[in-house]
Amino acid sequence: MRPEFEHRSANNSPGSLVVMAEPKTRPTDADVQAFIDSVADEIRRNDARTICDLFEKVTGEKPVMWGTAIIGFGSSNLKYASGRELDWPVVGFSPRKANQSLYLDTHIAGYEELLKKLGKHKTSKACLYVTKLKDIDIAVLETLIERSWANRHTPKTVDGEET
Image (cartoon, rainbow, N blue to C red; front, side, top):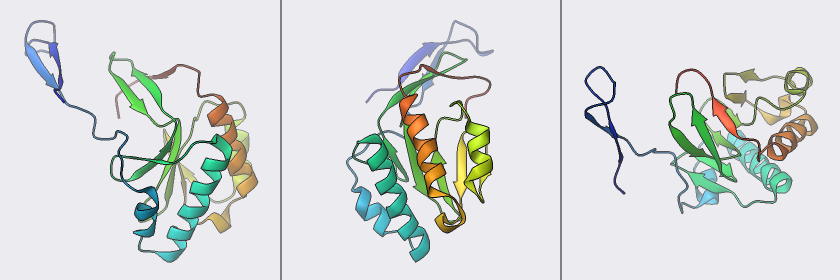
């Protein structure tokens, strides 16, 4: 595919041509189960299977590999303050080396209250990090996924800097 072109000058104002890169994180035909099977740590691999099953149960969608390391469910369009748009899974996760990175909607009703009930976790601007499923309340995680999925038709705008 050809990258998009945008006219900008050297100081990023309209006038000169700048190549906009294609996003690397997009849906692929890669085998989700093979990816999960490749997770080296047995506990993290088994947790990834459980998380995948939970996402599939809640969303009713089949898992899809996004890029090389994210397992996503559904697709939504994110709009950045800069005007850039990006397709991204509605919800998803990635079994990383240190933890499971969960991609949920952080703007759902009761998000902070649910996090207080979840158990051992960390958060960032857009991710929820869980080291071991045995350290969290799965029912609370299921509620977070349900509310994120239910909010999927709400237009998504990402304020501030692009990440």
